[in-house]
Length: 393
Image (cartoon, rainbow, N blue to C red; front, side, top):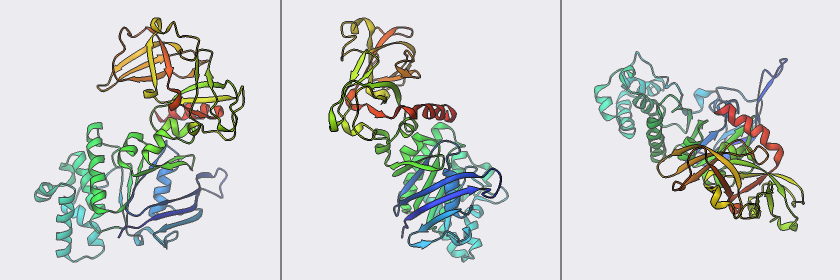
């Protein structure tokens, strides 16, 4: 039966008595549901791998508690936790055959040989490698994708209560990663084992996870489904980390009372009216208040600046910029547009479902924002957000 996973105020401080203690986790509290495929996501140094290692018992926690179901495992050593773990490096034994690699965990547990043979055969069928088992070579003779499946099989063969995956696809090429993440999700759903998947790749996390937790500096910034984090990010950091977000300098044009549906100006060229549910600031908006406007690439559009000239300067106008790069990505055409720093932070990415007639690289265009889909954030969050995005990339 699948178990839940609960963190209650988990803290981790490295070298707490030293001169330079490092706080890796800050009072982390949330619950992973039984049978859930849960992703820990965040930039390097955010604490996601530390939390995974604490979950496995490879690191002791400084404070708080960790539960597998109703059982407090905070002080229980790793070999008594019945977990399966898959590492980024695969960690297969080159001197052993594929069969012996997969069977290793069961041999340590002194499982009868007949049961080992049955379980290894079953699990290799599950991961789609029955032919590899028949050949039974050394792992050194396998491709990257095959090694990854063998590593997953080894972690699953003794029926662990919890499966932990630490960036298991990081060493694979892009095409193989896409195929393997689908395979891992298929295998996890067949087995029903509660699984934690650590990654810094936002696309990978959104594709594979039932729910995600975005970590930053040891704190959980937001927890939810990929759709919730993409469409309703709670702050600028999450908005910028999950998918691409364009940020504009905005200013509240006039007050609209408690409903907060106030018009917001971006410079003097564009006025939008974000939906009240997409305003991620506390309290009513006030006239003249500075805000940070966020818009996804698909919620921007461009027109040839000459055709937009008649509208410029009013609420239907746009911000004039110059097209730097045009990328044809199949279903969409992506335009990178450079605008004045007074309007936006960094170059804008605009996704159009069809190429815009008459617009080529180097041309001036007018950029419009879908106000209903825009989000409002506190302006002081943007400096750290953009800096961390550059560090991750």
